[in-house]
Amino acid sequence: MARLSPLQRKLKLKNPLASAKQKRAHAQEDVEVVTLPVGKHLHIELDNLSHDGRGVGRWQGKTIFVAGGLKGELVKAEVLSDRKTHTEARLLEVKQGSDQRVEPFCPVYDTCGGCQLQHLESAAQITFKQAAIAEQLRRLAGIEPDQWEQPIIGDSLGYRRRAQLATRYFADSKTLLMGFRQSGHKHIVPISACPVLEPALSDLLEPLHGILVAMEFTQWVTHVELLQADTGAFVCLKISTTLSPEDQRLLTAFGRQHAISMVCQQTDHNDLWLCGSAENLSYSLQVASMDQPLELGFAMQDFVQVNTKVNQGMVEQALNWLELQAKDQVLDLFSGVGNFALPIASMADQGVAVLALEGDYAMVKKGRLNAQANGLSQVDFEQADLFDAGARKLWQKKAFNKALLDPPRAGAKGLAGLLKNQPLERVVYVSCNPASMARDLKEFQTLGLRVAKVGCIDMFPHTPHLEVMALLVRG
Image 1 (tube, rainbow, N blue to C red):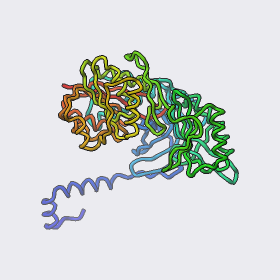
Image 2 (image 1 turned 120 degrees about the vertical axis):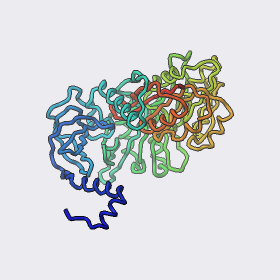
Image 3 (image 1 turned 180 degrees about the horizontal axis):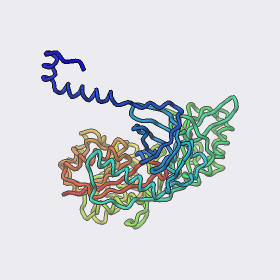
Image 4 (image 1 turned 30 degrees about the vertical axis):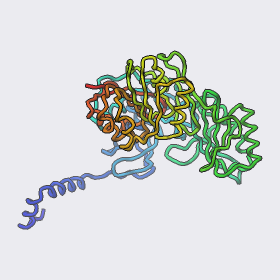
């Protein structure tokens, strides 16, 4: 090693931080980074599952993600891409399988980007999801809940009441691809049935494909949205330009033949209802604490939970956790069309009052109509941007002792600060993203609340999608 000059030694003593950085840089240079060429085959033992359900192993110190692999398996995998920190690979062969591995039920499991956990038994899927939620709460916010609630589960097949399919038409061969996107690609995986769709929707796929191919201008259809409401099935065609009169007549006849509502939706234009009615969209909500079911109307573009049975269980658990008492004042934030607000307001005989706030005014109006249709007068729906400090004006002159929030994936950053003067005793937080939830729960703890319960909600069986509910209580 070359000797340092007196000036170099002086500078080094004056800047110990720079010296420390130099040492770390040299240490990193000394570590040889393994480079794995695309297409290389690896035999690797998987020792974990990532948060998105991929098998995780190590190859000469480098992290390898293997889609389709399970913890404890010895697999043969092919390198798809290589980065400095990790490598992506696909499963070629299971040399030694996990006892939790099962045969996938879907014929397009290997290519469709939908249900990536079909190869893992259902009970193990729940265990994996709960562990993933716990890890993110612990790592991102240092949160260890007092209690883990039993997970909310429903049917694992035929549960999904809403789906969007992509389409692509090839004029030369007059063929149409209609299906879900391939995992990790924009390619369309054609399907003629889907086991996780509600049966009425799955049965529509093949005849719907046939009528779209028969159209004069099939290429104008870009997406197909399917929706099963209590009042029947709805099909929404996303189109790039107005359909010809002949195609409209063709689709109208198809809708009537199959007793479904058909609508075409063009960007920046009003919806064109071919048959059926926009007013018929609704779903029923019945939980044990209600004397009779509620009917909630919604529009095609409104957000509603896709899993009917799990949604009912989720609402019932939220009501139980709130422990509603006479004269409670409840805030429902990100209220949508009233999925939580209306069941809470149904406790009006106890004097419970609800203020439901939502950013989308169309859903606010629908919530008001739903309250009126169900005879609920103890709930007010108001529009509010809950990411803006101005929203505080809607509740600052009132005292709310309980709250529920069901924000989008981005979470509710800063909302706890807007509620700091409220005498909150119980807060129920429903989330589809444990990472943003962990951040927000940490903020809510500064209000003197602690995380008392956390529970996994299996809204999307056979997928790594994480849905979770947390209860915060005072003291």
